[in-house]
Each structure stands twice: as C-alpha cells, then as structure tokens.
Image 1 (cartoon, one colour):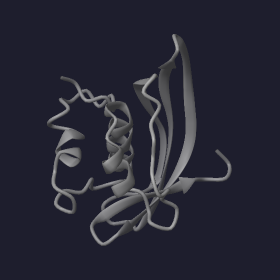
Image 2 (image 1 turned 45 degrees about the horizontal axis):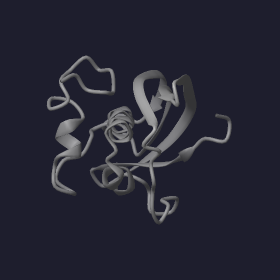
Image 3 (image 1 turned 180 degrees about the vertical axis):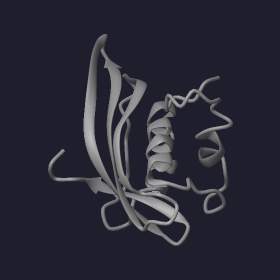
Length: 128
C-alpha cells in the first residue's frame, strides 16, 4: 500500500514507521516529515498520533475526526527551515479531501518546533 502522504513510498517505509512505533521511540527527522506523517494520521484516523505530535501549549484536550471526510492527496508547497539541525520551521501545504461526494482542499502554512529529538506541530501561521 502506498503512503497517503503522496511520497511515492510504501506506508510501512514512509509514515507508517512513525505512526506504528511506540510513543517516544521514532521521530520524523524534519518538519516536513512530521507534516507528512500527521497528514497520514488524518487519512488513517490516528487521533492518538495527532495529539502526541501536537505542541502541548496549543494541543486540544481531545480530537474528533469527521468519518465522512476522506483525505486523498497532499501537496507540499514550500518549506522554511525545519531541517534536522533546525529548532523551528514552517511547511506550506494543500491537503485534498472528499466530503459527502464533494471535493475540496485545505491550504495551511504550519509552524513547527523541535524539542529534543521530536518535531511538534504548533499552529497555523496567521497569514495562511
């Protein structure tokens, strides 16, 4: 099975290795890799991973995904910093989905920070 993040790799060889790993054992090495794995978590309904990779200052107490929303394509539009030696970064993306037979998309410029070895999603940048 191909990874939902649109990398072209298998789920197991791409985002699955982060989603399926026990907490605090495997971390995406860049902000973009975290963005891709979070998209895959949305696509597969993995709310535990989404909450675990959300910065505690902005993380909601709970998260309920719309079961009628099907995520089918992720386009990474731009990245700013967010590499293995950075402590912060941004990823601009467009995520495509279907809901009730209609196609739509979500564009966002997301802010990420790295704490120790773990990248965390913080929030959408205000200009998204």
